[in-house]
Amino acid sequence: MPSYLLKTEPSVYSFDDLLRDRRTVWDGVANAQALIVLRAMKRGDEVLVYHSNEGKAIVGIAKVAKQAYPDPKLDDPKRVVIDIQAVKPLAEPVTLAQIKAVPGLKDLALVRQSRLSCMEVSAAHRKLLAKLGV
Image (cartoon, one colour):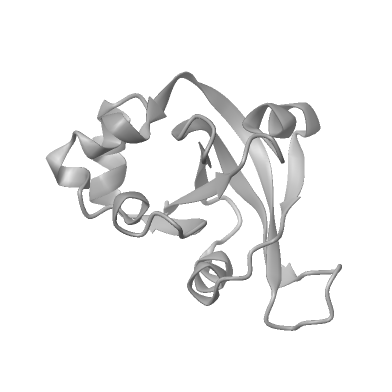
């Protein structure tokens, strides 16, 4: 099963908000590379939710509930959204500092392309993240 990482600012929409709502539309993505990632995501794929700016940590696991479809709020066929559903919070957040300390994660997109909001997580990277508690 593919894994992906989605970044969110917790002051805008946190993992706790997703737990409360149970499901949400993941919108607001405008970067072309991030949109390619959203379009690749399939129903059931794992999503690691990362709090950016405040916290800088992976805080929970979700799954894709509905794969990419046109953003209903915009009149732009290039802009898509997905629906995600909460699975579980992590017992302890896994911080960016912890991730950067693992040599095998140095080429993880979160480390290499820190501004990208949606990224694929390879199976090898996912195994290393699991050792950190994700």
